[in-house]
Structures are given as C-alpha cells and as structure tokens.
Amino acid sequence: MVRSRPASIPGWELVVDSIGPKVRTLRRDRGLTLQQLAHLADVSAAAVHKVERSEMVPTITTLLKIAGALGTPIRHFVSDDTDTRPLAVHTRAPAGGPAATGSATSSVTITGPADRFRASGAVTRLEPGTERVGRPAAGENLVVVLDGRLTFTIEDETYTVAAGESLHFPTHVEHRWSNPGPDPARAVWVTVPEN
Image (cartoon, rainbow, N blue to C red; front, side):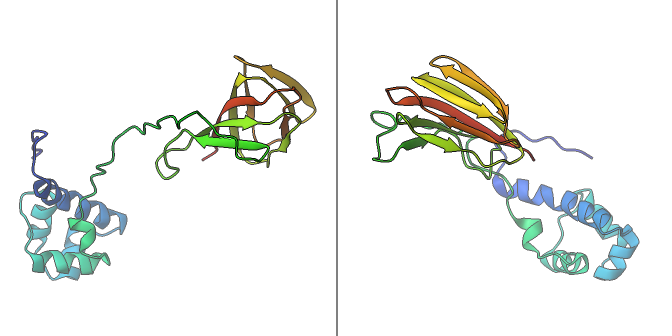
C-alpha cells in the first residue's frame, strides 16, 4: 500500500515512513530472504514483512534486532536523509570583482561546493605576460574571455581567444594558456571532471 502525503508532513513521519524501504533494501543487498532475516533477528517473518511494507512501525527492540541482524547501526534507519540545503547556489559578486592580489593570477570561485556539483568555475584575472600550464586530467574546460585576450595551446594547436569568445577543450591533453596582451585579461573558467 503506497501512501501519498502532502508536502507539509512532519519530519518524524518521513523518517518513520522510510524505515521499511531501508530494511527491504538492506535485506536484498545482503541477499537474505524475509525468513532468513527473521531468523537472524529473532523476529517473526510476518513482523519483518509488515515493517518492510510500512504497515507496522517497529518497536525500538525490534528495530535493534533487525539492525543487528543486518550489521547496520540503528541510526541508519532513523536518520533524516532529507537534504535541507537549497537546490541552487547563488554566488554574489565581490565588491569590485576579482581583486588584484599582487600575483600574476587571481580568481573568484563562482560555483557551488564540490561535494554537490561536478562542475567548478571561477572568474580569473591574468596579468600581461603571464603563462600557466594545466595539469592533464580527465575532463573538460570551457573558457569565456570577458576582457583582453588569451592564447591557448592545446597539444600542438594554438588558439587566440578575444573578449566575447570562448574555447571548450578536453583536459586530458597537454594544455597551457597565456596573456600576450598589454592589459590584464579576465575570463570565466568552468571545469567539469570526468566521473
């Protein structure tokens, strides 16, 4: 029996409703039948069946026995897995944009945390005459030049990318870039690593 609930469900009800599916998933992952789990947990097969179908809320004792039989801490079944963070990450502009730091390159990160997103991005500033070498790694880069001009060498191919233009390239090959112009160059860099 599948129950649908309104969006305003109390958090504890979501946790209780998630116990059965978690038990069923772990039991199947461990290759156990209902009867085998019941025997290992010293609980009736009917009780395990009702718990898995969310037709019965297990007592603490029953849940402790099931958790022990599955080799899983009880917190696995009662933790609130709901990610309460917003879906999107809004990065506000720093006052004045990327600041000159006294080094030849400065950047401001514009993407969310790596534990949630594969892509990483930054607005970078490269001073005139500066050259950088990328470390080959599986993935890709997308660079959009905002101001100035950058020269890229991707293996043995050279590209000059002016303001308003972009370059998209794989990062598993040798790559380098430089600012050959008389003025600082600014660009948006987006890097997507391979899984």
